[in-house]
Amino acid sequence: EQAIMNICINAVQAMSVPNQDSETLPSSAGGTLHIETKVVHLDEEYVRSHLGAKSGDYVLLSITDTGCGMDEETKAKIFEPFFTTKEPGKGTGLGMAMVYGIVKNHGGYISVYSEIGEGSTIKIYLPIANETTDTEQKPQERKPLTGKETILVIDDEEVIRKVLKNMLEKLGYTVILAANGKEGTEIYRSYYSSSGNGNGRTEGNKNGSIDLVIVDMIMPKMGGRKTYHELKKINPNVKVLLASGYTQNGTAQQILDEGVQGFVHKPFSITELSEKVRKVLEE
Image (cartoon, rainbow, N blue to C red; front, side, top):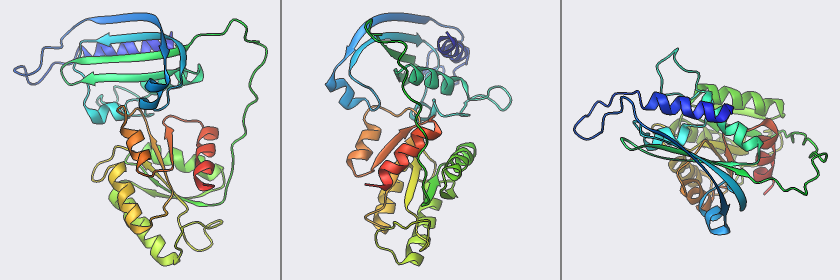
């Protein structure tokens, strides 16, 4: 109910935004909100092209509006905590992040389709419950994994940088922050050059090396993909974990195919982050 309400509120607001270019975009002072449900099956082919999806039978909840639509940058950040296109004081930026968290906690998958002037469609896939499932059996809560390495976080959102720093320091890591890809590569180059370490991995930063770089996908000046390739020029063995909200189908997978070792969806729990970090570090 909370997820549906948040999406519908966003849709209504999107349909209340007047378009600036009336010659190319339809008026969006009002519109149509369409909600549809049906049972679908996600096969392996779909899963391969939609990062984060799992094969199986789902109830699909599709919510479509005829509002102003979103550009690629907005779509890429829509599920990130505190991201908002509203004026200061008129939105917390937590609505869609909350939707993502609710869907994920129910074992579901969410996708976004949108174009400027064409409206948006949010699709929520919730797994169909197995009648034979023992409801009394609950999965054991996993404990966060800790470490002592040094991690460079590159993200243009100050709030996200602070949250990541807090999480990683609680897990025992030393954390360095950068506000964009250009700054991040310069920091990495300075540490890599001073360490004299070819593979970049140390225990607790004994040699001044950076053991892992966590990179946001969409950033000004230098995006995640470009940042990754610049880091590779400095150190071919650099270890990178891509961290981002919703991404256009295939974009994240493309970067993974180019060599990035891991991907974590925002928002994420400290346990999930800890597991992704350890997996990349121990490869």
